[in-house]
Length: 91
Image 1 (cartoon, rainbow, N blue to C red):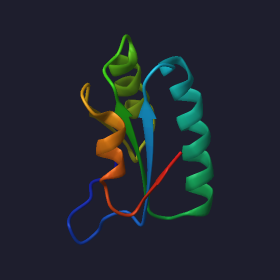
Image 2 (cartoon, rainbow, N blue to C red):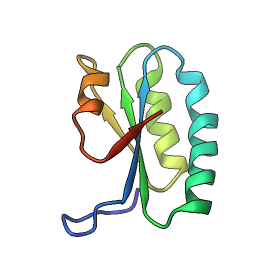
Image 3 (tube, rainbow, N blue to C red):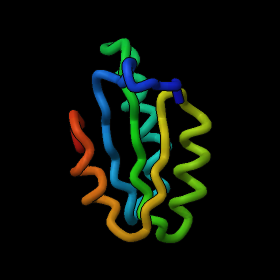
């Protein structure tokens, strides 16, 4: 993930709730990352992990594969936390 200071926040944030299909995450994130890299200079992908099953490990390994990807582990209220973040698109 690229480091962002308060003055250099990404212009686009894509928030991906991860709940029941963690095995689809790596490929989906790869496609999103490829698209965003080709169309935007400044973006981030945030995986909102629900903490169910293998999702924490899969989200963490996916974030290590791509720059600009971060994981937020939240086994309580994953989607709500994503909705509260400003300037974001939910896919």
